[in-house]
Length: 433
Image 1 (cartoon, rainbow, N blue to C red):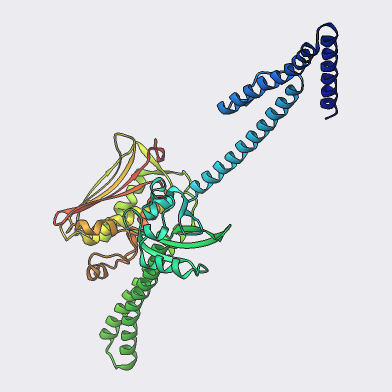
Image 2: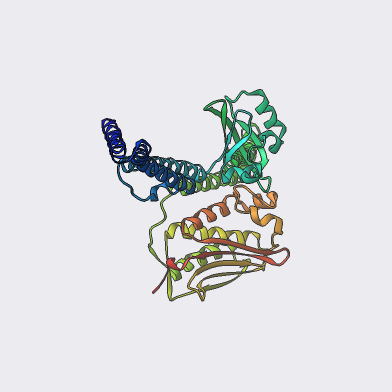
């Protein structure tokens, strides 16, 4: 400020001197002209700088303004530095905003930001998928105009957001169950949070079905055993009848024992999340064990054909794989009529994948049953399963063991002609002997 005052005083003195010189040598008018000329030079310079500043401001390129001198140099320098600081702060804010947007986009849940009038301010891609929204199209639209489910409209109008809302049959295929809740923030705004709980609901349903199925499977043999016990205790039976009843009780006890053992196997498989060790398993030895079990189970009622690759071994847990293979073989024996043929093979295909397959000439399986065969206690014919002593858990065990060995369980079947159950192992679990 002091420098500006000194400059002004210096300019005024120059103007007075110029006026005095002009008046002395010429007249008053010429002296006044000299004084005005002295004053007009800095005014013209300031006007030029102002015009140039306006031009660069209009073009948005004030940072590229050419350097000048005097007071204008300091003014423009400070102005440019201020603008650079503001732009850097703005870039930081925009980068932070973009990170927030990316974080919301990366969320596995649907997020919708609503203003104080329940209009959509922003939503992520998951929310677009859940509710059929399109942010570019639906921005600033009322959320209740776009989500027309009665329970959601009632939830929104009641304004009681302490508890979440369950909405079923949502998503592109109307197969999702969503847990929706609104959370207030800022000035009467709300954040709509939508979580996909479809798998959780399915798990709960499976747990309920599992408990019901176990109760049912255990109740039947227990009821039979209780009936036989009451008969043996209350009636005077001869030795042959008593022996017959005891044998039937033993049969039911074995059935319950098999059920408990299979349940324990399943529980251990599910609890053990670590993959099995890559232990080399001799394929011919494994096939020999299966052959002995199959022939003992068949009692000579079936024709067997065995095929085993002698040049390769499998990597995995022998106990688990033997259990899975035995389950598939036992199913084939139980469901193939007497005189039927069963082919059992353990080979390596042309792309070095290990293939264990069991092909039978049984009654076959209808296509609608194939996707559900590995569900616990799922049976196509319950009466037939009880006759063969099946627990309904065998294929569930096979599937778990296959998953632990990165293998695929493949099932093909033609009603009236037979079925083929195969386990396909990846190349990293096959080694050359």
